[in-house]
Length: 267
Image (cartoon, rainbow, N blue to C red; front, side, top):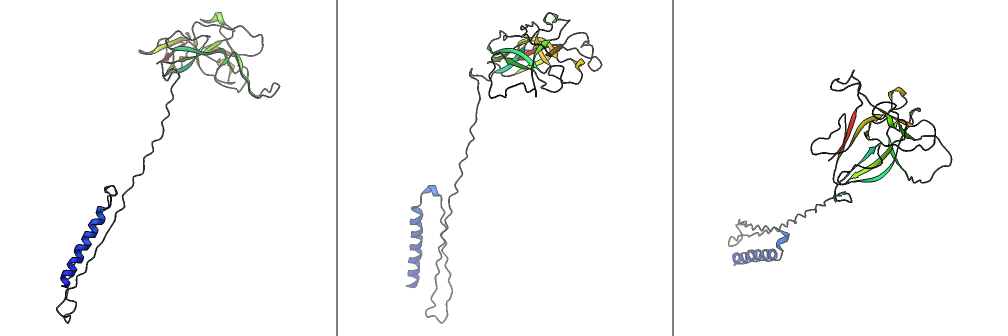
């Protein structure tokens, strides 16, 4: 009789575990381990009938479902021009207009300016100053901490002698259907598949002005234009044609007696 009761208890425990497992949704993916252990031993030989004790151990182990943290993708910012492409911007020195190439337009025209050649310090690069400046807050009076001067051609001889000591115009251009630009010195043609925007001569500050300051090498259009003087006197920012020095540059193919050329290329 006792054996029969123990068997009923075992079956009832199994059914209870099965019923509970069925009530748990598949999405939780929980495991149920049911161990039924029968330990048969003589409790006591003096125990009448040699009764067998049945120990039932039910271990119900629940494994919690692993929750995957959502992967958050960082937003990607894509910057495009208003024309639908990446575009490229460059300055055409010596001209007040942009080249007549496909997709090229004028952003603004102005006057080339930089540090005067007679003083120390100041900026080493040239700027294309627009004709219609805008100001924020300012201190009245000339402070003289740093300044900028209009640039002039200093070309008494050579291919640009007709523009000697005249003010230099400039144009800032945008090419909407190109994505990169490069100025190539000592060349007047662009590599295959590149667009030539303009070509001309390399110009910079003169070495005769000693160690006062150095400037950038800029590519000035070969067909130069000039601007009327504004009537002011003083030391301008001066541009000179550039020649190679054969002591450190191979001659030929270079020549110390020829002005270096340049070309502006886009792609």
